[in-house]
Image: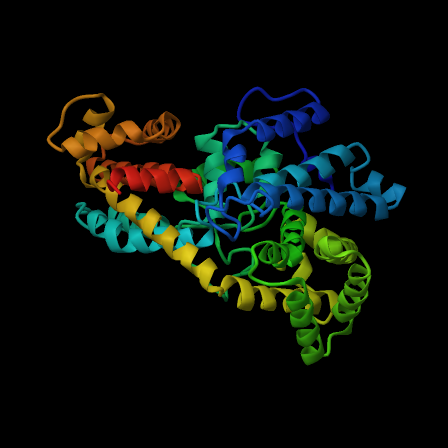
Length: 479
């Protein structure tokens, strides 16, 4: 039975509001005021360290995703009949439904590291090569402790922006968002410490890590409160995912023209040729009509006109398409067991085929572009270099690290200087995590303390903006 009043509640970690609209507005204010949200303005979307302010950043991308999610949410409500709104307990929750979809979309990239997804791979490679050998030195005499050590080894080698987003919201920024708002950000339902399996139930929802071991208990608590089964999604998350997929369609192509990687005529030619090759008529009709309209304008405005018209047509069509899929599968989506992305559900639709063509062109002519890959390699050098520079903090014993935090002298003079550069918020999160540990079980304590120290260093480096990461690397490398 669909009952949205069970999903949109007043529950939050502390200081809950008395009314649902006040709770929703409180979430909105906390998100928009968050330093982590502001830092997205200097994080890579595709082009790292970009000075041209018209090129998309994670912030501007997130704003676009938020608007599209708002459009989808409003369209879902508009298509429901009055009696359905009453039946689903949505008649008093329309503002909550729309705002949560929008705010979730603003938060969806908040855990992404500097230099984009390439940095995620960089962090995971470094952990495998440089951190795991340290973890292997920890003594584990009992089978339970050995299993824990193996579990944490998987966890630290599975950094993901989606899982980091949950950590940023709940631990690092301590936004105290409603449980509704937090759970809607949980795009994937597998823990980073769990194995990926194509044969597992709800395998699509578990294809990437959605949270770390450090947030496991809190996620389970929220799921229980909002009646969401383990491994299942919150219904609003499907809307955020669809909005993200839709917002990507022409954005990177548009930015590539601004950057001079492609021209308007080249973009048109690539899409036209690919459509003809795939015998795809819908997208071909859209771009041919808009290209003709744009060419009728004077030269400086042709590029803007083409992308404005194409984007408007595609976004509107795709929004109505995913709304139909959402409502046709409403109960499965509400229960969080719909094992697909909305935009990829009907692989025979003209909309899905249009999306795939645009994705294929972007992958070949933008993401594989020499300049873009050069920027990715620079990002790799910076992130990898920073992890190397902060590695001494991971090589300390737990006693020495505690002494550092108490501003006591230790033999490693490098670590004494490095710890002073780490953010106090991240150190507070580390200390709060440590308070939950049992100090009597010394083997287990040392392993988990070190794990939280890995999280501390990863939190610090992954929370940097592109330009701050570059500066920090240059300063510490004496470049």
